[in-house]
Length: 387
Ligand code: NZQ
Ligand code: ZN
Image (cartoon, rainbow, N blue to C red; front, top):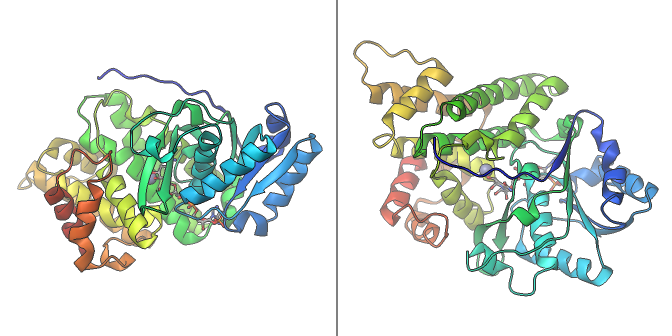
């Protein structure tokens, strides 16, 4: 087991109906709030009006930053930061999926930053402070509610990179599974693949041996698959939605990989480039890439992939099967599950162009977090995943 640090300064409320707390929790932090929301789902469902009512009911003055795009843009965050500075905003309230939460985090940091915030995404310097953040999650996928990450597209450079800082951990996160009932089917499935990717990428490539993390990852993958199937069969199943929501929070919180030491998220880094190039949903890029990423890691990490096959998909293998054969059956089983759920399993399906692959491979290497890969590695993963 490798050494690790754990620091999670977030108060988390989980359960159906917990939305009610947003007014009191926010007002205990500040009386001037910037409410950050997405393109319209929370407005249409009546959630925005409800939240505004709860905030005002506790004496909180509300300013709004609406219209955050899926694949949030830096320009939106900078606009939010300007509102914060002009209005003296004391707390930011994010109501939405991962895109809204991430936009709120970068807004919170940019509002108190004196330089070019993109330098932080380029690893040139760190964030030193941020406006406190309250989140109300409407989609189970990214785990942004309990982590220090924010993934943003710079609309000037076309890059999709990440900011990591303890200063952007939410102060309070509210997880109310009832809010996820309106999530469209495709985003439900993309979210499930994203949750699995958050634990699986680290599991496959882990440098260290951590049996509890292995069991956590394997259990999490099974729980996500089971609860996704239940949610798709019965959209009103709040128990299944609760399971999925908690899986999502834990998967990207760092706990599921404790003790693994160095590990790589190649699917994520390549996926971010695809999202930046074609404005694709994050989970769609992952379901297209993950089987290819697993195959790419097969030679170096055969035992781990064979363990995944046995423990998650009950692959037995015949007496003739080598460990590589067993591992391959696990990869095939995962790909079949994604296809069964309706997730795309090739890049061609999501509109990636074959003639773009070489240029995409080059661009991935500009990402400061993709330094373990060579251009040839990225090209191999893209090509294997293409069709
Ligand atoms: O924009 P609105 O109108 O709200 O619609 C959204 C959007 O169209 C909709 N939606 C969300 N909740 C809904 C709903 N529709 C109906 N009912 C609801 N309750 O779903 C669509 C997708 O929303 P989005 O927030 O983009 O999805 P997700 O939560 O998957 O977030 C994806 C973003 O998070 C980043 C991704 O790269 C991507 O930009 N990630 C953030 C991470 C983090 N902060 O830790 C880690 C992840 O690996 C990921 O990179
Ligand atoms: Zn992800």
